[in-house]
Amino acid sequence: MDLNSARRIAEAEAARTGLGTGPNRRLRLTLIIGMPLFLPVLGIMILVPKSLRNDVLYVYEAGIVGCLLHYVWVFVKYPRSAERPPYLTRDLAMGGGFFLPSLFFGFWPGMIAAPLWALFVGVAYAVEGTRAHNDRR
Image 1 (cartoon, rainbow, N blue to C red):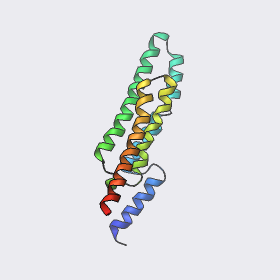
Image 2 (image 1 turned 90 degrees about the vertical axis):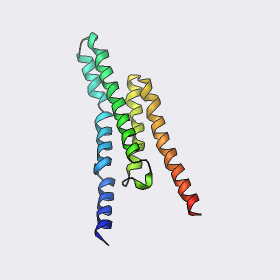
Image 3 (image 1 turned 180 degrees about the vertical axis):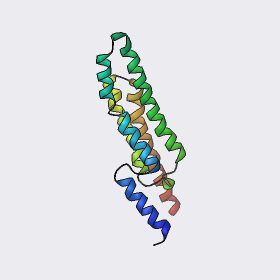
């Protein structure tokens, strides 16, 4: 086993467990920070005056849009699944998890974009796999 193979095995194991490294780590942190943040946002909305509640909600909705755009940015950086680090396709599909906080606050762009994003990643992966299978024939 050469050094490059050993490094890829170590990176794959790091990506599979914990937060991983590189783009896997960034996507997982985006999900961990952005998705459950709706609970503190709800608490803040209860504590602030009524005149500021919509502003707090708009800031959180902008955060959800930013998180989804981060997922798009990583996908653009690694468009082909064969060139992605291990488990990055799975982490990209996890962007669909932003459906729940969007649903909680009634943010319809997030309710539409998050599941469509997960579907897009899955279809892109299936198309690429089918194309690779047909090229081998």
